[in-house]
Image (cartoon, rainbow, N blue to C red; front, side, top):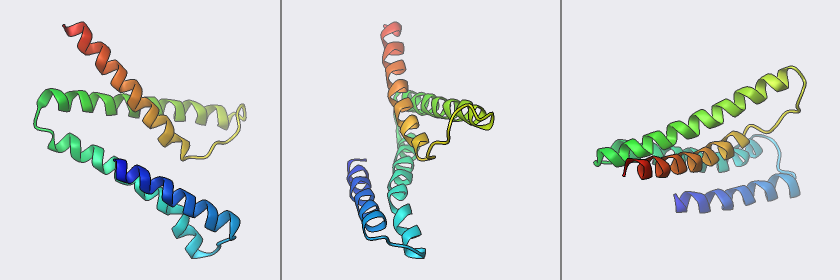
Amino acid sequence: MVILSLAYVALLFVALISIERYKLAGPLAYIVAVLPALTIIGMFVVIGRYLIEEKDEFLRLLAARQTLVASGFALSIATAWGFLQSFKLVGQFDAYWVVVIWFTGLGLGATINKLSCRQDR
């Protein structure tokens, strides 16, 4: 995850500089613009592999609950925003923010796990 995070920052920087400053256009611009997204997709793959490969059932349960909370959180906000947007009550937002909301939900899921484990004691 650390390597993918560093790659994300580097590729986002490359995309911003090459497209905005140097006015990269055409098919190459599309490829460069998608490169940072590939690192985020890689993070999802790493999380999925962890869920599959974790041997400890309790740790796997906690990780699964955390990702379910994150997914529900992100999808709920995106859905509510979509309805507000369709009634022209709010403006549009860039779709990549859903990932930011999802990772925020991952933190919320970790907090729920921690509180749940405290109550079990």
